[in-house]
Picture 1: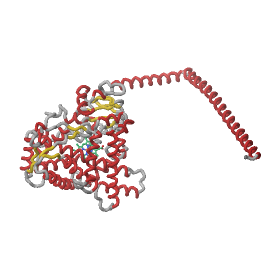
Picture 2: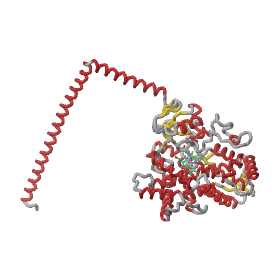
Picture 3: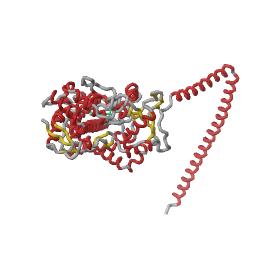
Picture 4: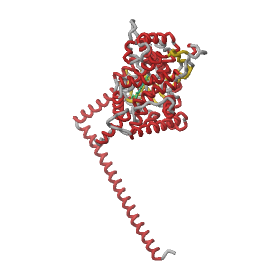
Length: 553
Ligand code: HEM
């Protein structure tokens, strides 16, 4: 039972609270009322003031003329902006449907070809809608160069679509922008140069790897085999040596999984369902390709984190072994200086390594696979390369300095890169401000596709754009010539960071393999039956097919 006294106290307490509460509510209401009436008064006063002001303006002759000038200027401004945006209309393009945009007018399985065809109708700067997303496409050498090189800053941002965000959270190099991107790109270039990218040290690394690849091919003793994995491992090992300071055995299961995962990731990134995902991101968890890709990324991160942790444990600032060491040393130095806003963070290290490993492995390996396939498809060209190699190099190890004496081989490698066109739309760019290109207004933040297919197959630049013709890179005397429209590494601010390493790898691997082997189709297949249609992903790769490597030396 509750005692009577305490009941009273409780009643009194409640009453007190009620009275205080009531007083508080009443006070609030009064205050609100006051505020309302004040604001009503002030509104009325304001109205009266404005009225007075207008009246004053119209009564004073100077004010009337000033007001007139103001209105005239405003009208002029409106007319100017209307006419100037009419002078600079947005790029033309196929009429988009609501919701779907131009999705039904393009083939998502071979987007670059579809866009190339559309450029013939709409011109070198046109726009298409992927669902609600507008993309401006740049076609042809002249236009791509005008944008990416002449207006490098304006066209130099990366378009971070939902997929790229999921993959890298705007860290690293490939899918980042702003100061962080600038610092990471600059650091990666200088660190890779210090480790000999495009110079002697990487030449040694590549030559060593050529030896392992040749041994791998020899094991098949001329029997037909699929060279896909061995070539992937070889190019991966070159980048691993620079990134981690070591190469892996081709049979190492952890290495095999890392490389295979990487190839799958690049393939998945170019699939039609992930193009759709970028338009409707909430669909992600329902798309198998998206969930597979995210799983791949998580596993990838775990593997690279482990490699970084191992290197951290044995880090010695006096002996920098690789890219990761260089990053960690710089990070520690900046931490010692208490530089708080540094970009040298764990996430930037992790994603830069993942980017370089992925970009450095698949692209070079894919080009090498195309090169062997083209050599089998065009045996007379293979014969001429081998004749030149035998004459100039003989059976000794081919080296980078031999390239200047091997113009035909060099021309063949360039023609392989041109025709294979492995990154057909580069990676999507974005405009950093409103910009006019060939009279068309492209607003800030617009996604831009530099259509490399249209540059490498530009009919006004190449004598025979659709056929394999090494003469594209040779003068009348058989000397090697550079061609401006040779742009497989793209151009401008976002141009491939690994170009010099890739060129060195392509030359040394290709020349060494052709020195050692005659490549032929399997006995039951004729050269014409070889399938040259690409498997479409973010890159265009040849279909896996068996070839024979018959020893020559
Ligand atoms: C034959 C081999 C290669 C080809 C054809 C190639 C091609 C390309 C292309 C077309 C781009 C996109 C450029 C753009 O968005 O405009 C790119 C970007 C990039 N590549 Fe390569 N690449 C190759 C090898 C490599 C190698 C070996 C590495 C690493 C050492 C590498 C690292 C990168 C990086 C980090 C980017 C991003 C650059 C940025 O966004 O600032 N690539 N590459």
